[in-house]
Length: 330
Image (cartoon, rainbow, N blue to C red):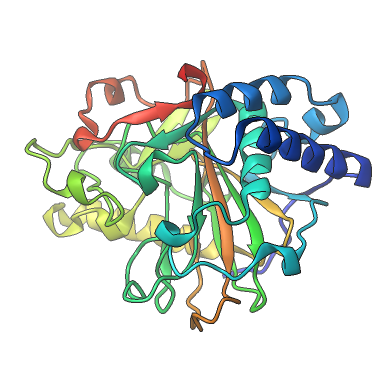
């Protein structure tokens, strides 16, 4: 894996202060509930009123890296409180940073949430949790979180993913790899563009695992107007059911993504913005202490209206019964 440098967009001090003031005003007016329709409407109005200097930094990903790091937002570690033991106990911890994330997400498109994940919240807390050390979810720690498309099992998945760092004293790296950097021959692209295997729901969606419906077979690759895109989650793809030729091509795709992968060790106040159609992301293993000082991220997901980067056949998928909530509809 490379340790190449991710593209950076640097907010000036005035822009960072404006974002924090905006979030503080929203909280003062609406309270901390990030599922409140009133708060979501206020966030939408605030995002629409952002100065052009900030909006310029929030323009779509514009390089084949498929990502960038937004830098310049500060975090008061002393005022943050201890890292929660799980998302379920986080409550309103880090609320102002959660609203900043929601404002950023709303400026980029339509924030989305999942009815069946983290109580339908539009901003998730990503922290290591006792008993989940080996899980292939954001609550894991001891094992490599395999590179994957966020919520790859679902046709309503995000176009853009934001990972905002509140705390990362051990410099735990997020891994990221762009399909536009990979080298694949035409035969492998053609084979992986066929709908041969399903992608199953991950362990964060317990009710989806019991869905009574045939898992749809989906392509791993797709040629859109801008180039190759991907839908990829090897940890939840039953490769044992594929033909040998498909497995071999999939293995070469995995190897290429590993070759071009970069490690991004976020610092507090930095936000990694990932194009979820171009980039798979993961996390290196680390040992959680559960002493209130562990790595803590805030995650927001965004759908971009009118974006046409996915196969039309996705519209017929059942999504394993998982309902997507969009903030603009609130």
